[in-house]
Image (cartoon, rainbow, N blue to C red; front, side, top):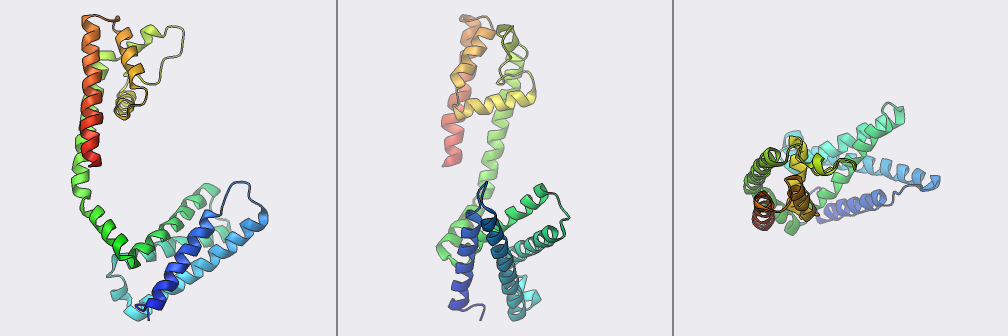
Length: 233
């Protein structure tokens, strides 16, 4: 029964309906809508719990947990039940309940189990995670190197040109500030202003200003046009 087309379409429809209920929430909504959503969510918890128990009965406990998708379904169902109990007993602050509610959004991924093309796409994405992790490590090392270099060149020097005004947030005074500034330059967000600030911080145009330009230009070109494009490819 759990492997029939009818069961397949019932689960898909339930997932889509649950997604529609979650998407209908908005700030300042009327009380009747909140009440309706709570009732609908409880019904979905019961239905998905019944689906899980039905699969366990049909496949057996061992056979059920062989599949990673079934483990994922079990995690989402248990988290939903815990959320329901905590709300009913009023045992958790609103922030914690909001975090648990986010778990319900994971039910959307149940569609990948029954949609072959989407499942193959997700599998290909997971298989490529190893190479993506290597590229992320390379990008992180690149950012760290230029952040440390920027700290040596501009650490504490941006204050000189902002004696009255507040110091800009994009600076190289600390390691974390330097990381954020380098990341901003890589994204191309107002990076030329950071360049101009660096030139003024070291005395303006001249030999030193030329060296400063080389630092920012190499960082922008190598990071933005080479590393980020390789990562996207």
